[in-house]
Length: 282
Image (tube, rainbow, N blue to C red; front, side, top):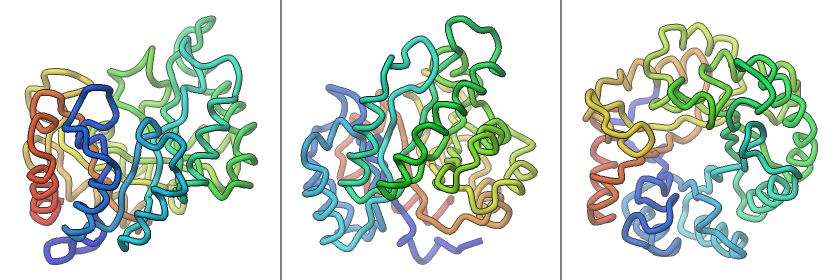
């Protein structure tokens, strides 16, 4: 396992940690200001959300690379299954195009919930696999990999049909495309005692690792994540499983949804705290 206590060059910011994934949240820093602030603090990369990029994907991607960092990924696709999934694939194609223009190697998939005419998740997972298989060649042609992200079971029904790494890998196996893998997010997997065993089957298919913490008394299931070190997740044990068992060597992406705490702070202070916590706890 890599030692981050003296080197945080593997640290990446997901701009959701500054509130950039929701309208009206955070301090409203421009992408340029975020890029410059991360570069000044030695971050290795940034993950953006589509709503920040607009028609400026090429410009923003070049700005990140000129600052000496990587564009690690892009969040996220529209839902592929469930009641809120679009009826056509135009927005999905647009997300892939944006990732390619940005120079983001990975586009994250949050799947969407259970299909309206089904119960449980098995049938929905089959349909998800079909839809990912249909779009995987398009993404591959654009140089983009697709990362299926399992979510905590509390998001079942309306936001996900994948609850564990094993679930996500089963869909990857159905798709059988070399550019389809998984993202492992501490917030969603910290509780899973079978994580290490599942990751043994994920070698070479872990495309992203997301950091935060699970607060002992979470006040909101979506918007009350903890900063690393403030919660009960065994961060080093999870990373050891991701790296040593899952064979992941990419950047570690801090993604803290925190409407009532971190999003209300000065972004410069948040970025400083992230560096400190990453080196001390991750």
